[in-house]
Image (cartoon, rainbow, N blue to C red; front, side):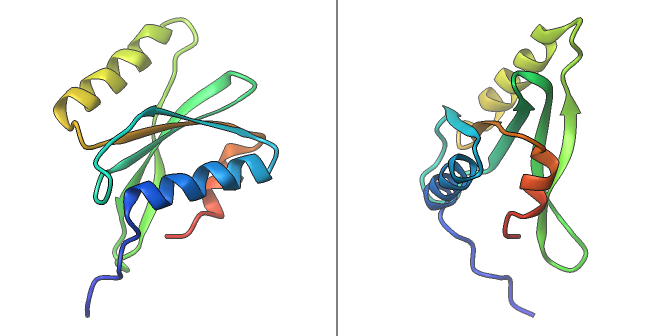
Length: 113
């Protein structure tokens, strides 16, 4: 079974931004990664609250689903930023996209796999 064709990262990021804005949200590129094959991380929130990190994880069926991998502790906000900085240093090809949108989990569930 062949692996599905993957959209170049910059096109996927553009699509994410347009989708967020079309759904009443705001999307910002915090870190620009490798144009074609960079990994995309999504920092989600609604009105600046409930900050979570979603990363695309391979599934048994071959799809790649965004999964929540980290939540920001409101008492230790710096730890979340430090984690993102470490990830960016470890992999300079990653994209970090911030989405401030109502019901971020629902929005992410609708994204193509």
